[in-house]
View 1: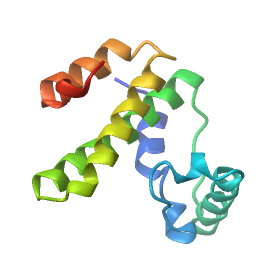
View 2: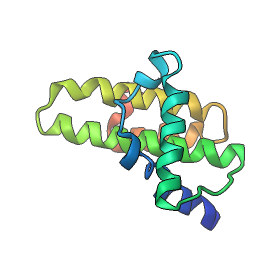
View 3: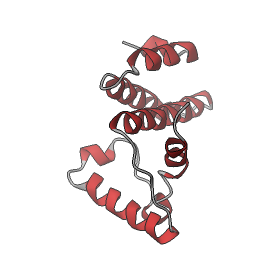
View 4: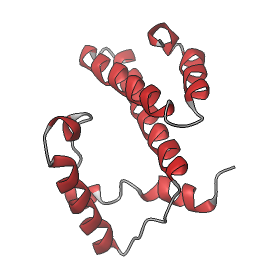
Amino acid sequence: MPRAEVLYYCLLHDSGELFAGDIPFGVKVQVPGLKDAMDQAEAIGRHQLGLKLPELTKEERIQAKICDYLEMHETGEHEMNLGNRYAEAVVLDTMHAAQKLAKESCMSEHVNNWLRERGSGKHVR
C-alpha cells in the first residue's frame, strides 16, 4: 500500500487545473517553456484553493505519473470504444509514455502486464 501522502497527492495533483486549465496530452512536452509555465499556473491555483501537495520520493512521483498516464490511456480506450477514432493517438501516446517512465523505476513489468490484461497488449513492445 502506498503512504497516505501518495494517495492525497493522487487525489489533488490536478486541482490546480481549476485555475490554469488543462492542456492536451503531449503539448507540454512539444512547446518549449509551456510545462514550466503550466506548472507555475497550477501551483498558483492550488495555493488559491489552500492546497499543498505533499513531498514524494522520486519513485513515488514516477509511480503516480504512471498511474496518471494509465488513467488517460483508459479514457482514450473508452473514447475509441465509443467510436472516436481520434482517440487512438491518446491511447498509443499514453501507453508509450507509461512504458518509458516505468523503465526508470521498478514498474516496467507491472505496467506491461496491466496493459496486456486490458487487451492493450497488442501494442506492448
